[in-house]
Amino acid sequence: EVQLVESGGVVVQPGGSLRLSCAASGFTFDDYTMHWVRQAPGKGLEWVSLISWDGDRTNYADSVEGRFTISRDNSKNSLYLQMNGLRTEDTALYYCAKDKGIFGMDVWGQGTTVTVSS
Amino acid sequence: DIQMTQSPSSLSASVGDRVTITCRASQNINSYLNWYQHKPGTAPKLLIYAASSLQSGVPSRFSGSGSGTDFTLTIRSLQPEDFATYYCQQTYSTVSITFGQGTRLDIK
Image 1 (cartoon, each protein chain N blue to C red):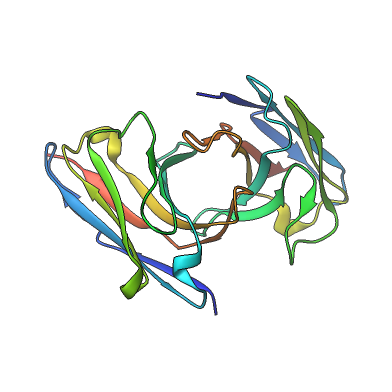
Image 2 (cartoon, rainbow over the protein chains, first blue to last red):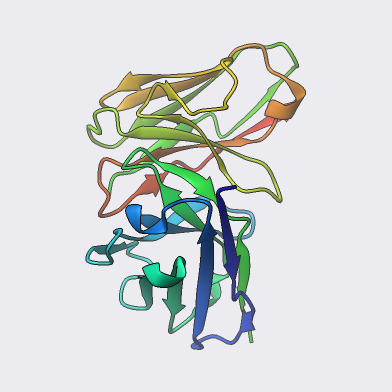
């Protein structure tokens, strides 16, 4: 079964740091670009970042550029999101998703919740 | 960034109705347009990719059309499980992928 499982979401203070993880199974992880997408409470979906299959290419939304870093470890079938300088507006449910070759995202995890609050 | 604008923002319909949701891009995105269904507490689900291709396992009552800047998602004969929020997404610019603001489809 193709599966993505996110972890690492917690309550953190503004200015703090956090690393999210996403464990992949059921497909050849290092064949695919991977994404992080988030949904703030009461808001819509917002794309956060992507990383190419080999890690050589990364892209970020303007809202997180310079604060978040996406990475992957293909030997562990894992995707990561290092989040620094967290702001209250980063509070959201964070999903990892598998790329369908520029045709969207065809596999999603259930998400992990990040709450930034003092 | 490419802006994606959906209309309407919300919609009420009945089981059996035909529903159309539109999505407009702020610039030409060819056919790099995808549609998702999202229900509370679940992962988003890819319905349509490349503007009009039905994702595997998605019922044929869902269809997509359009190219350039204007796109539509049509649900023919609404079923109870179709009540959800629908998002369009452009992947023309993978430097900055963007979603529409969503269309909430409620039961009338």
